[in-house]
Amino acid sequence: MKIHRKVLLMLVLSSVSSFYCHAQPGLDEMQQAQQSLTQSFFSAQDCSLVLAGLLAIGGAVRVYYNWQLGKPRIDMEIAAWFFAAIFMVLAGAFVRAVFGI
Image (cartoon, rainbow, N blue to C red; front, top):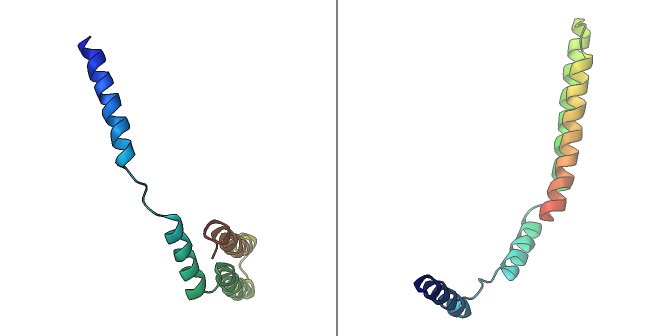
């Protein structure tokens, strides 16, 4: 009997206390933060494309240098630089999709 009273008392107290709890505002602040991000920064997609272009140019110069030196295994280096540039393009699209910037 005592246990049932304690459970009932806890249930009543928790339901009464829930009436006094208010949710914190958040939707307006998130929209304001998104607006400030889109106004302050250029697009993450543009940034990722610029970085991918720089990676591609740097990779092309390095591969050309190693090719001229006569290194026999440049195919792995070509793939590494290519996929680094692809990753940057996809990372920009991912950031744009998640954060909307």
